[in-house]
Length: 167
View 1: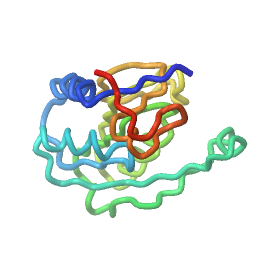
View 2: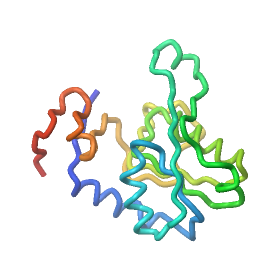
View 3: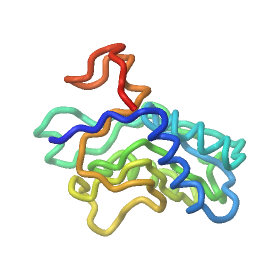
């Protein structure tokens, strides 16, 4: 799989591409850990969203379990009363298979909230959902994206810790 290593400048450009897409006021935001924390923080600041929540979702990494579309384990999720009746922006870094963000969307809806989905990158070639996609996305890709906040913690194979990234 092709890989792209992004710089902070490229992330800024992606955020700049997202911001004009948003219409109206969001009552809150659910950032999906860990990938949605950085873009969610930037977007919440730009849109002045003060009601910030997090969701931690775990899917089995076992290949056979993934084929069965097993249900996620929600390690952390906001209480229903924090979501009900509210327009909620759900943020993650990338929509690959789409399993995580759609699981969060379903939980927000079940709580009575009105979720809209936001990612920096949408990968339509990997998605498991052919009738669903993010409400907002900055770029379409078929590459494995390595964000600048992933590099210093070791990142995926092939990205060396602390190695400078050229702009």
